Amino acid sequence: MIPFGVLLLAFALTLALSLVRAVWLLRRSPSTALAPLAVLGVTVIVLGSGVPLNLLMRAEFRWRAPGRHQVLEMIDRQQLAADPKRQPMEVMTLTLPAGYRHLSWDHGRIWVYQREGARHVVFPTTVGMFLEFTGYVHRTDGREPLPPEHYLHGSSFRSTIPLGGGWYHVATFS
Image 1 (cartoon, one colour):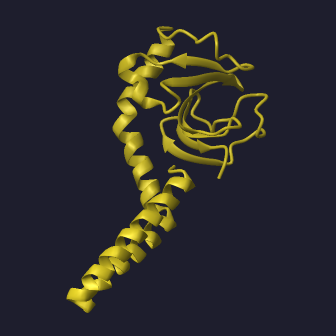
Image 2 (image 1 turned 45 degrees about the vertical axis):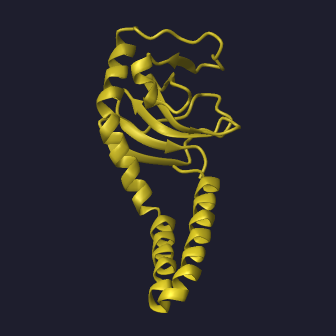
């Protein structure tokens, strides 16, 4: 999910450029001067609805799914070593090999933990200041994932979207 501040900045920049272009075009042809503002309005409505972001999230998930499956196989074969500096509570942090670091937006790190006898592997896509995150979670038994046992934000994720095959997109903040 794109942070609100980035969307706001993009909107402000697009609005400023559209207004400058509209003033410039107003001198040449008043009817075409309003076209950029109309395009901006439609863009804001489409982005505000969140539909393209959901489609982009699903497309990104499918595009990188083979790499994530390879990482799960590496975990099964115990080929990934835990990062001893980053071990809060029962969550194990694993640093991905160089060719796989693009799968996690937490500097190439993934999180692994057990809940209800099932392994959860988190590939974060955004990480906030207070252990808030969004990301893809694979739960080995295919059921809906749970956050770590002593998680700061409660006993369930705020948002859980099933993606199939034990995969979910989760968010701890809205």
